[in-house]
Image (cartoon, rainbow, N blue to C red; front, top):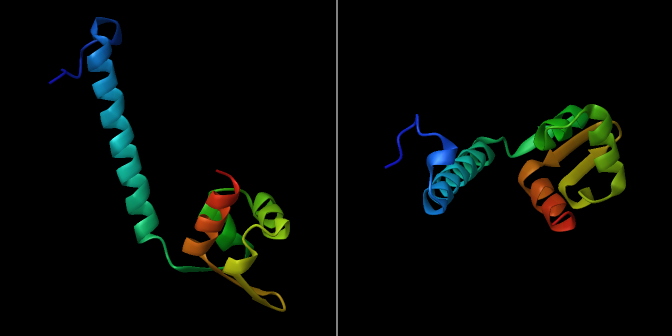
Length: 95
């Protein structure tokens, strides 16, 4: 167990790797929990911006790029987006 006050310079490579692994696991766990708690459907450009954590301008760009078209249902000016599908489609395109 590494004490919180230990300086990085005093760690061995193995200890540093352990600290990094733990931090990554915690971060991924929080991210997965956030995605699980996210609403399934979002509305409008603001909803798309919320899915990706970007500005509305960037959300319009993502929508118009066609990458997440399968996740979007639009009738007139009403936009409904399947958040989970949009994240999956965007991830496939940008991985």
